[in-house]
Image (cartoon, rainbow, N blue to C red; front, side, top):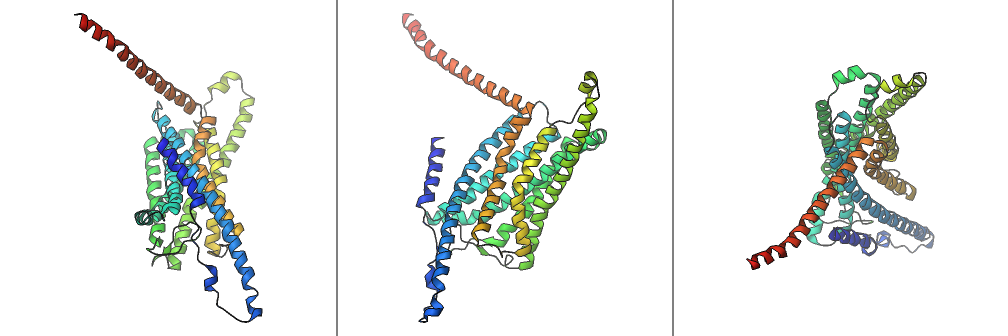
Length: 387
């Protein structure tokens, strides 16, 4: 734990001690003796330097927040996996909970590594080679994990809606094994989608980097505008358009059914009301879907802008701020699931308390055995000496 704390402290300090890798802007301006033509040059240079300084501050903030969110995602989703492993029974909703935890854990790991690579690749030749080898594959895996999380959240939302609206057909058609197969198929499809990043982009052996970001160039496939546009469209539809649209429809339908059910229950007596059963994890699912939609919207808007305008809006301070905020909101979603579970899932809270109590009891038992061994040791020696 001390080693981990020291490592993160060193990374945070690198924000202030890692110099910006920038080209000398004046070296690209041709010399001229005409004062009329040289007047507009200095204001443009001042504006560019100001923009780069602002973006440097934003990148520093993004680095700190990304690494912090990555550490929290690692801790929170490991707890989710441990708690769900101690459930008495695993249903369809729990399968999707585990799938979301694995996706969020992967997002925390790969997003943190991307941020760390942007800081440490200048430390040595070996560090640069390792970062260059893993940078864009890590980005692709982060996109794959995020796409898988979108598809699983969509499946969870639709499943709970069908369980509420058609309980008998849902029990006949849906099962835990089918949910596992669907989650696995979503992961494989998302990995294929995420592979477009290491296929289209690579880190050259020599290159100039701006704002502490790995130098990047396009591959031969990446230079093909048709292929790049196709990759953006596929990612947008499978990561945002289809899942978010389905979640909005399913969530709206679910809340409408719940509202009508509540109005119907008010006219029933207490015994009949208690006899009615509602699908498991319904409130939790609604909370997860609402937060997921809110946190994914900015990133979806960015990809939509890239599809329509390509990179026309890149380079302005306001748009770059929007891009960074969208990235951070997407990564923030990887830490909110455990908060939703603790707030809205009673079974999760009870199981977590049991796990902690068992852990505490085992620690007490180990400490008591250790104390008994230390106290019985001298007594045995005394008895042996007397004999």
